[in-house]
Image (cartoon, rainbow over all chains, first blue to last red; front, side, top):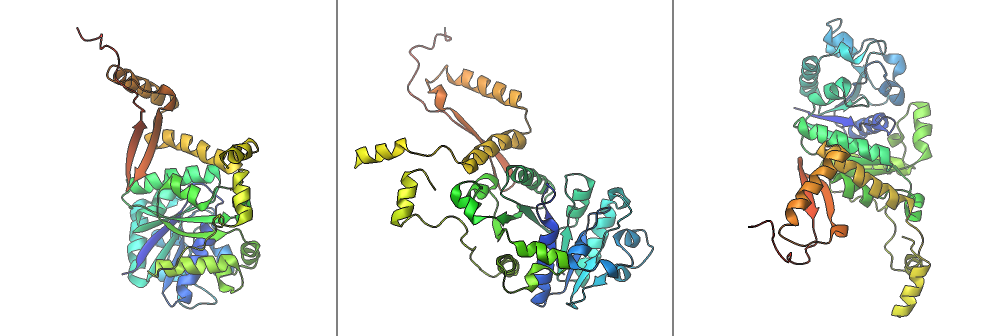
Length: 266
Length: 93
């Protein structure tokens, strides 16, 4: 039986879809049989990030309405034969699927796949609840911004209330230069506030945008910081003990940093 | 050396924007997590402190409240620096 993860955030635009795509590819690269599910009915994006938009025939709404079999709606990745996508419908709304139907889809998928990764829509309403309902575990994505952290806190509370346990956190788009200047919440700050276990941090990396432009998740590359960060997260998901890359300011031991500290720098 | 340190303190930069972000978040999340309005929270604190002052003197400028979450449960922490006992408990006959 496979494990079902929901990737969610509350706030939109923090990188849920990018995280889902990269973790999906990363797990598949390590040999697992993976399906990524786009639960953002009406605003489908995961197909685009994975570069599979031209291969879609049926979608998840067709499956629950009985217009096709589940296997027919699954799109096989063009690079990895053990990676699949269950696309969202683009012309329907969140109400097109009920929680019972979503539960049923999840229970079927977990029999076929080692990992089921569900990309949740933003928000805290039906779309989010449907995305989370069939999941065993939740991954919350945030960026080090006030609004994103606040929404992450809200979603953590809702996930716990739904009985999903304590979610794991991914902090996306960290900029070390800004953290060092004291102009961005540090990893430590965010963890102090949210008090959930950290699954990983992803540096702000232009290569992620380049990768999305091409429809080739950045984790396929070997030469980017974001790619390395995603690979580490994938290893942790598979139970490996990979230390978090130290992105917080260097330990203040040198003469200059001591001097800076005295002058109130951090 | 101590004098030198206090000299440095004069040049200390103002609060960084990340520190401002953190303290703003901490305040916001208190209300969010308790699902109480700001007015409800203030009223609750007032009433708690009203009871306390019959039993202890405290430094009201240093009273702090935190709402923390641990393993799916929400905890309310109130820290009250006690500075002695009140001279009389005149509410007692």
